[in-house]
Length: 155
Image (cartoon, rainbow, N blue to C red; front, top):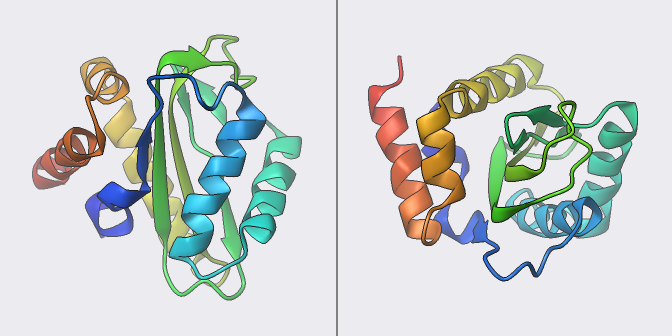
């Protein structure tokens, strides 16, 4: 599975104006995008994402956060991407602002697939140049094209 298979342009939000000024606002927006993708109420997805964040922040450093969870009734992996050119505080492990929030929700019964998806996201975002291009993408179309381009070259 490619990342472009789990995300759509409609589930990519570029927040240039600072409309989502906090981690809580970002998670709420992410829950809305992911909830519609997996046919789950936004509140249910938000509760699961918040529960995961209580264990440990999904802000993994280098300006990246990867909130994720699993739902019993999800049919497939679904992703959403929030981009913050100005950065937001996400309680990242390195204490730095986060510019890229790539959220994933998948079926509870598909743990292996979920872990492979997280690994693909990690591979996409480990490259500093790719992170900069994504964080500064002009819009969802540009960000999606970057993900598609990465998928085409990924092994």
